[in-house]
Length: 149
Image (cartoon, rainbow, N blue to C red; front, side):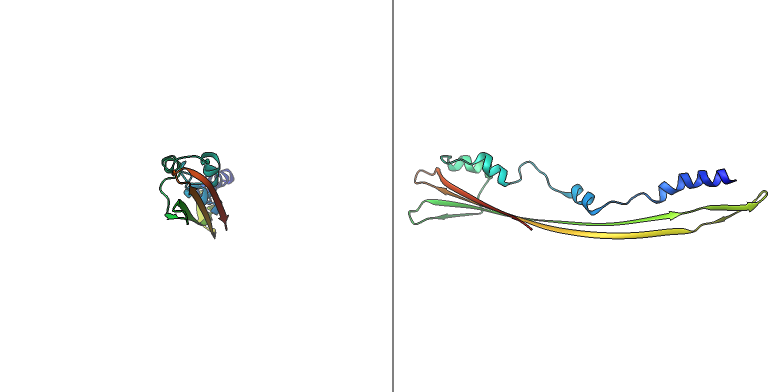
C-alpha cells in the first residue's frame, strides 16, 4: 500500500505543479525581433556620407518627416518609438492523494495546496535619426539619438 501511495505521488505531483512561467520568459515569447527593425546598428553599418536619397530609403524606408534648411536642402527625420509590455501570472497547485485504510478497505483524503504570483514590466525605446542632404540629394551629414527607459 505504501508503494502505491509513493507511485501515485510520483506521477501526480509533476502533473499538478507544471505551468509556471516567469515574466522574462513571457517577454521573450512576445518580443519582436524581426530583422528589418530599425536600430542604431543599422544606421552605423549602412548610412554613409555621399549616399543618394534612394539608397537611404532602401536601407531605412520612408522618413517620418521631410523639411528643408535655410538653403532649401532636404532634411529627413526618422522618429521611432516602441513600447514593450509584458505581464505574467503563474499559479501552481498540488493535489495530494493520501490512501489510507485497514486490510482490504481503502479510503482517500485529497488535500490541496496552491499559490499564485504575477509580475508586469514595461519598457520604452526611442530612436531619432536626422539625415541632411546636399544640393545634389546626397547625404552630407547624419546624426542619431537613442534612449531606453
